[in-house]
Length: 120
Image: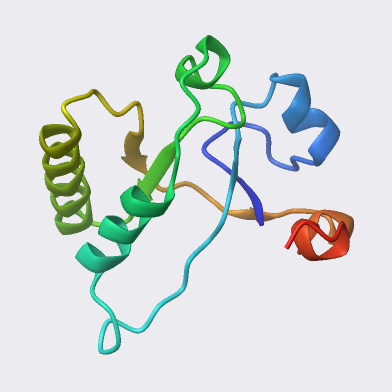
């Protein structure tokens, strides 16, 4: 768990929640491409993720739906998979697909939030 996509050099939860940093709350996924493809990861994201379609999320709030890519190939794959899901679901998906920025790990108390708060 952490923050990315914004301009604040030292984001923390209260700052990100204020809406002044431009950061999204995010999960950084490290994977072995010999075990799973980037395409498969993006497909699983769209199968499991339920974007929030309220105005705050759509307009760039910290809970906005985002995929951050590192390469042109990743961008093409993410856009292709998104278009596929939009066609299958017959609806617009508000997930932004943008270049990755520095990932800032969240504070310790914010790590494993669901486990610590018995939500899983």
